[in-house]
Length: 212
Image (cartoon, rainbow, N blue to C red; front, side):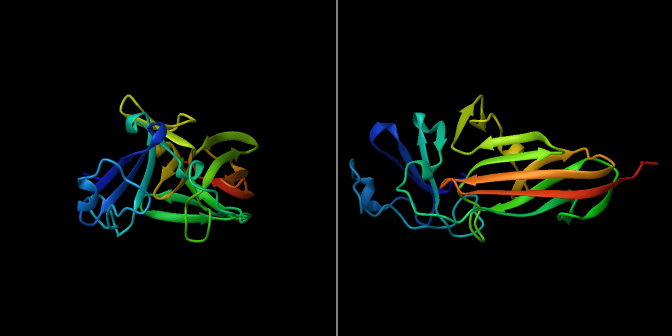
């Protein structure tokens, strides 16, 4: 399966924790136990299932696994005063990517996916609690990241958005945007789980090319 070798543990208040992609499956120490306590060995991180490198995929869930909760809402708080980092906008056309920064200009003949790289810390994409995208001074999309629920076979977050609504090629997906001819502005607000906030606006010039 996609989760590879995994362990699920039932905690108090019907909370489940899961550990995916384990190297050798469940530890023999826990196979015969009904009660797991702090410090028990349950497995080794690995690369089983759908995985591109050895790591631990950690999950907190309720409702018999049909609602996934962001672990940062339950785990002990970690002091964090560093706000998220908002990178460039990314215009994707087929396999080609164009990075757009404030003050840039480019030609456009159609609507193409626009994404943005947002990292909670350098090299990490975790801890974003809320995101808002405004296009030409109007709210285009906003989302919270506290939980995912399974409904009619589809995972959606509390804002009713699916994975494909939120992400595209490993970045945050703004949308397939129809730009105005001339100046356009995309404003982004990102808040992490310590309520550190970053806002960034990109104003750029679009030269609309008519299709022949």
